[in-house]
Image 1 (cartoon, rainbow, N blue to C red):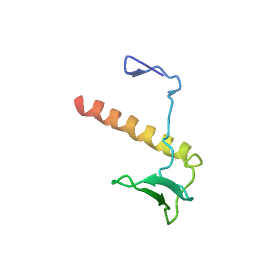
Image 2 (image 1 turned 30 degrees about the horizontal axis):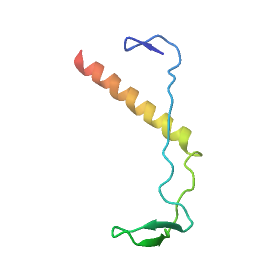
Image 3 (image 1 turned 90 degrees about the horizontal axis):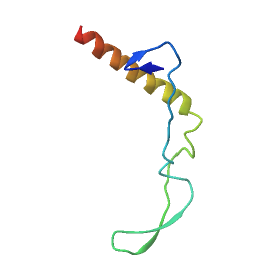
Length: 77
């Protein structure tokens, strides 16, 4: 954890949220800019869920942010 921006030696704990994937592999009913009903069907390779990769993504981003703060602190002194 941190107290006043200083590590107290405890684990750093935070919550994470992911937005749903924007594209799925099945046709969807929607409307175009003119208000006409259309069927949207995406082609290509799309991941149905990023949850499998989430721990690696969160760990990498946490390391990046902590390193950034460390370098900022060292630049001040």
